[in-house]
Length: 323
Image 1 (tube, rainbow, N blue to C red):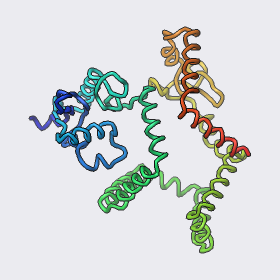
Image 2 (image 1 turned 135 degrees about the horizontal axis):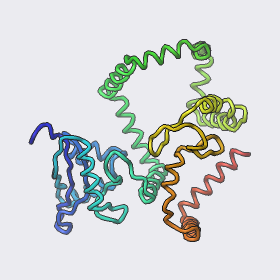
Image 3 (image 1 turned 180 degrees about the horizontal axis):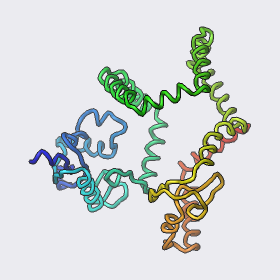
Image 4 (image 1 turned 120 degrees about the vertical axis):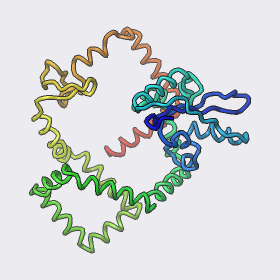
């Protein structure tokens, strides 16, 4: 193979007799990326594809190993990503019930934002947070990574490269010349050098009562109108000084006037008028159909125990903050 064609698209096949080499995963990579999901590190990592790992575990329980095939090579990353997206769409994904693939995303550089994928990830996140063993296991993995000398050296090297750049030096110089930041820095240094403050901070941080008191102070502060006004003042000043705005949809910069942007309560919308009109035309549903779909969706939510539990927890949280 030509060394210039280092990008490739690979596919995992299920070798069990009853599955008849069914496709279970499609990916893109370089080097040994196609074997990553077979490594123990991928199994231990919570960020790995849990659906795929469960499928691989079932294959190994049958005394077999997944078949990994590199089906195409490319000389640039964009062409490989395009082929990956095409194959995933052609074969179909398991959690969308369109095919057997364990891919959670549609491929390429983007992330899948479909309703089904969001629900799947939300349920997985809630299950993870509710399980103390999973949280402890994940904490142990992060601790082992953060205390690894190789990992620390790699991070320090990246920080050194970043801090040595002209942009970082200029930003640091501007911060050092700011009188307000210099005053705040001196105050923090004096406070942190105080032994009494260190003892109080240590006691408050490591006790449940201290953490709860700190959380109460933060809640009280965040609901204080004066604090909210001070926190929003820099953002509002920056917004008022803007003369052009970049559309998050088309990426074009347009004058910040009502000719190009719709207003909202705190300024202008993130999409320009042209992009919003394109999204609205043509309408997929009539107003009556949208109302019926919304009512049906709300009825399904009210029958969902998980949704009701989250809603009740949110209400109690708001009541606790208000009281």
